[in-house]
Image (cartoon, rainbow, N blue to C red; front, side, top):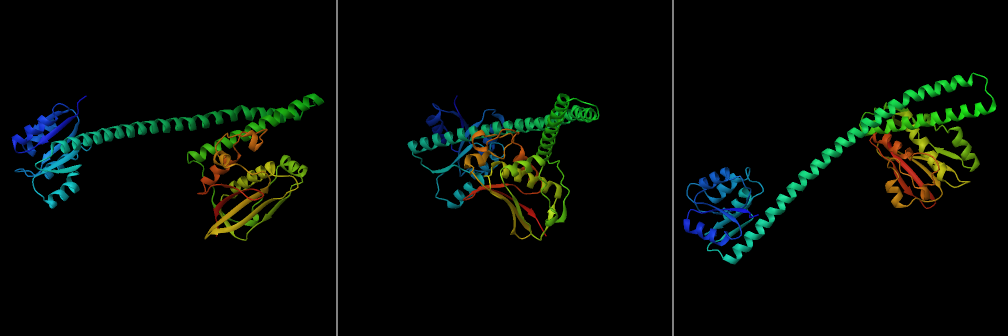
Length: 368
């Protein structure tokens, strides 16, 4: 496919000379005035790769003509021909006409041909880049639609799961009130345990989706740091006892401005991970410090195996499991993702770092 170029000069001999130079390689349009050239641009449906125009023309200069083409043909390349060493015109052309190059008359045919070829190549690159940007924008729009559909599906499926779960848990409670033999009690207990585990998973996913869709609304209010509790679930407390782990806290006397229940949930999940992957006979520490004015940093640290940088980069992603490094036997890999979602709603985020003896996880929160 031949590219189209437009040659404009009030001297017909110059226009004919330009046509003879380029007609074998390009489709050449000719005009002897700016007004005629503008009319040609309006009539021509094919994209114009390049405009070559003389500067000194009656009624309309080359710079004035090029300036008028910017809106209608923004991708078109522009070359200005001038028989004068008129720096003011050249500067004006660069600023208002956005020329690619200016060439003095009389032109050197080889230099002019090379310049035109490079200008057309630049035009092709601009068109290709524009198309790629359009493709990327379309792809982004499709991803946004898919992401929205995913979130709506997750909300729908999780809400739908809650209805049968409620029935299962309710009838499990009723079963406990009846006389059961040992085997039946074991089955009822396992049903209840599985249902509760599924309920926790549904609640976690709903919280993550709510944070991603910006519908999670934390109940922000000031509270004393000392009132922040870390409630260890019986299973976690039992696991810590078996590993001879202790939990030490160094609370600040500052007041925190956040959703206390959500911050408490974040701490409990981080402590759970610290215990799970921490070494035996080593303490798990919660420490606080003022990281910057009106910001408190809470850090949970444990001694034990370090985490590779590759895993740190992925560990906050939903459903990330790494058997070798994280030693998962149960779970969906949502714990730290949920923490990140909650903190995102507070304008904060998790930081995971290796220390000399283990791992520390920290986050900042507003304080008074």
